[in-house]
Image (cartoon, rainbow, N blue to C red; front, side):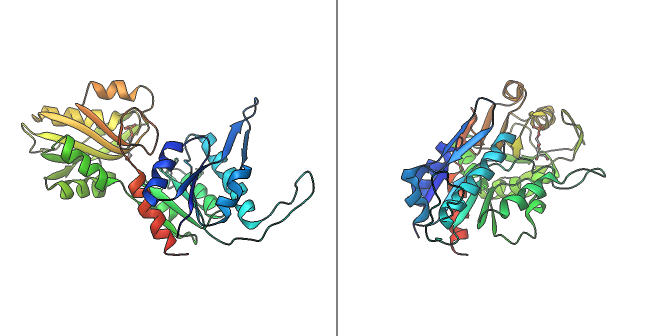
Amino acid sequence: MGGVVASGSGDTALAEALAKELEWDHVQLEARRFPDTEGYVRVPDDCIEPVRSGPVALVSATFPDSAILETLFLLHALNDVREGNMSSLKNGERSLPNVGPGLFLIIPYFGYSRQDKRFMVGEAVSARFLASTFANHCDGIVILDIHAPAAVEGLTTPVELVSSMSEIALHLQTKVHPDFILSPDKGAVERASEVAQTIGVPFSYLEKKRIDAHTIEHTPKDLDVNGQIVAIVDDMISTGGTICRASEALMKQGAKEVHAACTHGLFTGGAIKRLSSHVSGVHSTDSLPNPRANVSAAPALARGVNALLEQI
Ligand code: R5P
């Protein structure tokens, strides 16, 4: 079933790549800001028919915060166009037939996914709130390498959780030739072990304790990495602190080279510079535009869209 991939002010390159994977057309929606920073979105005239003639996969991130509102407004506008709802139109109301379900939200990086539970009484479960809000405005969601799947459990809207680990494994195998894969904490064990298994090399993990957003501690552990090339695999790199501490542990134990690989390259607060003094290479998908993106997230997202198509 052919459809279109749509995008707003960000994510255009990834949306185009996804469209190519799916052999669909890409449509560019209008999304801009007023001088006071409020957002404006519109499905342009030449996109009305394309977004009504088949399924629509809207590629829209939830990071930074401004992207959350843009995503919601784009879903609202696309839903109205697909339902033929043109009420409140200044120059007289019009209507078109409702084309039915088929609006999918494709989230390359799901911001707030680390707040999937209350760590203290009174906190908002931000990830869960966002996921259920999006689910109320679309017919299916694809999320790439979500930090904690608990955020989307139990939603009645179909959610496809997809992963770029097979593409990351292939990239590491051909460009880095690692002898050993390390997960820097228990949370990334499943992902990193999948990479190790695909490449066919040994794997281990570290026990990590986060003291605060900038400070983490690893429990010392003997790793058989003397003279080896090691790739540390995580779902995301933010400040780079987790990777730098893990790399120090590996170098102390004689690793020849350490590389860092992740799906989501946030690289906040000077992370790239910090990483450059700790690892030989940084590898990331383009789920977020970043200077170290060298693996395409599009194939994983396409797998998610195809899985959703089978459910409508
Ligand atoms: C947390 O458990 C995540 O999987 C990452 O390990 C973490 O968010 C990385 O953050 P940073 O780069 O700031 O250490």
